[in-house]
Image 1 (cartoon, rainbow, N blue to C red):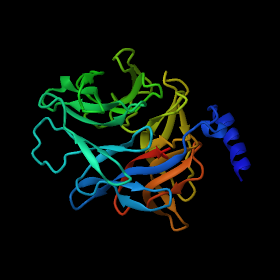
Image 2 (image 1 turned 90 degrees about the vertical axis):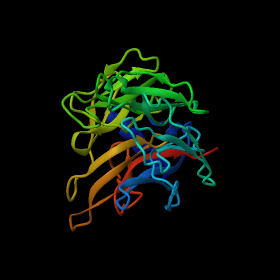
Image 3 (image 1 turned 45 degrees about the vertical axis):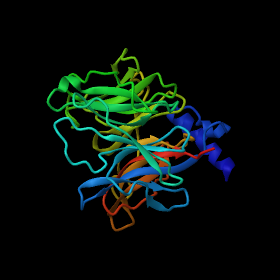
Length: 322
């Protein structure tokens, strides 16, 4: 069976023009657990859950609402943004960066930085684990809107990378070598004809657009070999593109029984799978199901990991700790 899987992986790489995933040559990390956000309509907010490889799903941070969970590069910790129950939010809101050890549920929080001038939300680890990329801004002064970075050790060292020019910038992923960040620029979080996906160096130079206007996302991923960026395109479609904006390619999803819609897409640690939120038809009745799902990198073999009672999203697949 493993030999058949390897042949299929090779064929996929040839057909799509993608490099063979590292897992095929035994150099990639092993896939671990998946973290995601689940909406709770009773409080009109999200809570973070973890789906283990054995199929169980449990709350990871049950005490407070939170979102944007991301695994540390070594798969030992999860960072998320949370207000920690603080309801007093002025025009410049911010979130605590909560760092959790999933093995025992212990956690500590980094206080919001930049307040009151800049509200920041920081949970996207750099590849070496030393920094977080943050969405930053101020509702009353949009000149402050952009991408920022902080130190993961103590939340210090706030540094600005982009100027959103009155719009909103949301970090999507770091390049594997940590030298660049892909981000989405939109009108206050809403897609428009001015929205697009961009790449920028971490020193703020060489900012460039990599999608046509009208593309909009705040959650995607950069392939481990640095060649591809995956993200959600218009109407719940999956796209990949090179970091220089060339070879924009749509990944088809099965449409038996009706069209499937995907979002919040990223790669598995070994590079052989995608994880995403999925709204897709199930069975001959034409009923739709929503949850977190996985698929091959060519969009085939869709498989639901969770069946959401509400809305599951913001999935991130962690490496199995060494």
